[in-house]
Structure formats: C-alpha cells, structure tokens
Image 1 (cartoon, rainbow, N blue to C red):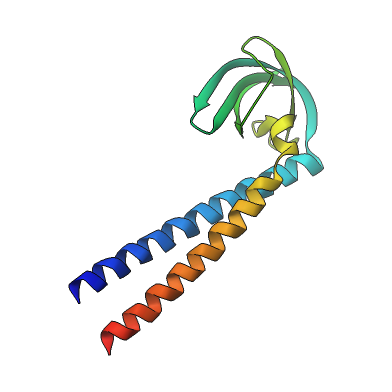
Image 2 (tube, rainbow, N blue to C red):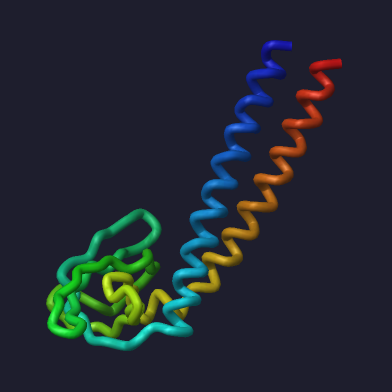
Amino acid sequence: MVQNLVALAIYGAMAVGLAVAALHLLRSWRAGNRLSRDGLRATARCTYLQVFDGGVSLHFEYEVKGVTYCSESSIVSVTGTAPGQEMVILYDPARPSLANAEECVSGNRFHLVASLAAAVVAVLLAGYTAVGLAAVAL
C-alpha cells in the first residue's frame, strides 16, 4: 500500500509539473502571437549566443526612441546569426523592453502544440492519480 501511495504521489507531482510547463508554453505562445500581430520591426545587434542542449538563445541590443534595450530571444534550434551581426527583431510598441528575434516569432506554433500536449498528459496523469487514490481509500 505504501508503494502505491508513493507511486501516486510521483504521478501527482508529474501532473503538476506538466501543468506548469503547459501554462508557461501557452504564455510564450500568446506573447509570440502578440508580437507577430502588433509588434514593430527593428534592427538589433546580436551581443552573444547562449547555447543549450536543444538550441541557441540570441542575446541582442536595440534602440527605440533613443533608449537602448537588451533582450534575449526564445530558443531556436538553428540560427545564422553570430555575435556582432545585425538581426531583425519584433518589439512591443506599448512595452519596448519586450522583444524577440523575428525568426523565433515565426516559429511560434511549436509552443502551442507543446502546451496542448503537456496539458493533455497532465490531465491524464491527474485523473489516474485521483482514481488510484480513490481505490486506495476504499
């Protein structure tokens, strides 16, 4: 019985983690959608690349109305941009500090699909955990 409770606790924790990941991905998708719809184009200078296992994040500087901003892109799998090169970004005119590389905004659909997949798995795990806890309680 203790083993069942431990397994159910692990499944429950996984469900919560996946739900949080789904919400984060959904927020990223919405932000990218807003930038692609309302964002203004600007030229930025890539300052450095941050390499991850699954891709690269571009760090860049840009200027809007005389104010210089520093930002970081979403993670992309491949980029042709190197430090020191100019790149095209989209920034939010209402909040110019919010920006992303144009190449990242165009590939934003992944966030929506990943968000939905994580949410489905989280719901399935939560349901399995609830049924398991009900069975243990009886």
